Image (cartoon, rainbow, N blue to C red):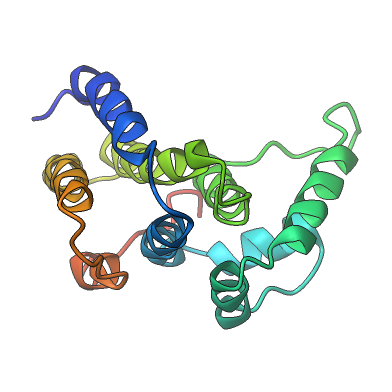
Length: 185
């Protein structure tokens, strides 16, 4: 089984280096590519809607990222975060999967000049798979996916260097047959 701790530091450094000189168009493509992974997670839409207290339309979100029209999402996230009172009697700490979803949403709508948001999206995929490995009933299965994902992200960096046109539906294809159980249910 892969020891993710050994690989995460190197992968983080490689992603930071590899994503440093991305064009705005590449940033958008990578964001859309990664978002497809998060759309597979259980209750993703409900989690976001509950947090931002507003309906979310997946197609509009994608279109807004493409048009670089995400300021309203950024404002909603800032407002929602400011409204969270962790000392309130009715405060409920989020489970880990909703935290991954909200982090991904926040990074996807971040300014495209903030390359660290793209790094965070891809590291979040690793963290999510690692979480499933640690808390699901099939750790070997999730470990295999984790190993493949680390290798895939390393290959993606090579493709970016060679200026290959990215296939933004790659995560849809990669995870088409993967069912993400609701670990919190």
